[in-house]
Length: 301
Image (cartoon, rainbow, N blue to C red):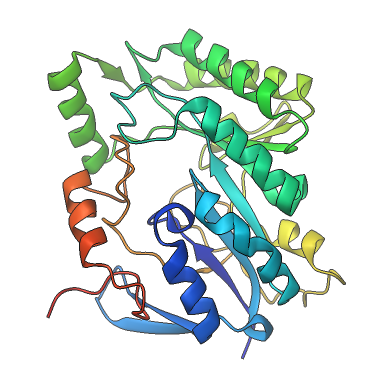
């Protein structure tokens, strides 16, 4: 069996809300998930010899931090995509306070090493509450606070999917915020200024699913990145051609991976989330979640 890269997860925040389940799956040596299209159930081995790397996506790795040393000792290779935006509660109702997010990122870097930490400032939401000047100031504040704890920053602008528009509409009604989708030139101008801020803090900047921003010192993001995995392997050994690029949407630069998460299970309350239709739905599934199940969330019945 070819070794697999495990994504944990684009669909939900496993470290923040399902760390206990994840560690049980590591102990059991496998996990199951429902195919997003078709509804069938698949299984993947999580044994160290079958797992090339684990890519964690999170806003709060704290529940998983005590286990990172054991994961490394068992032979697992991993890195963490850590989202910190510091948006107001109207956009992220149940996110960590900014100062605590920063401390958690620095704690993660101290335990795992800065080479295993990537800061995501995304999505960039342009609104009356978060205009371009807000993003430049907030990005500069965060970058200064985490300097030395990571050398990579990733950005993207919010996509106005159906779920995203619904969240924006709710925030407009409840908080009087107006949202807009900036044009290419405005996005480019913002990105170049963020590039300069990142460079002052010894960070590279890359754009996720934003090919029109790539160039002039802004790289193309590969969030599941075979080159990062290769750099973390003890011998760097990966057979050429073993892993193909497997985009999840237009402009995506990711390497193929298996995602063991589930949609509508993250209760963080981010209004722009494409993976959760509502916090109420996510809370219901969190209550139904069984940490002993092979699947993160299994439909009742």
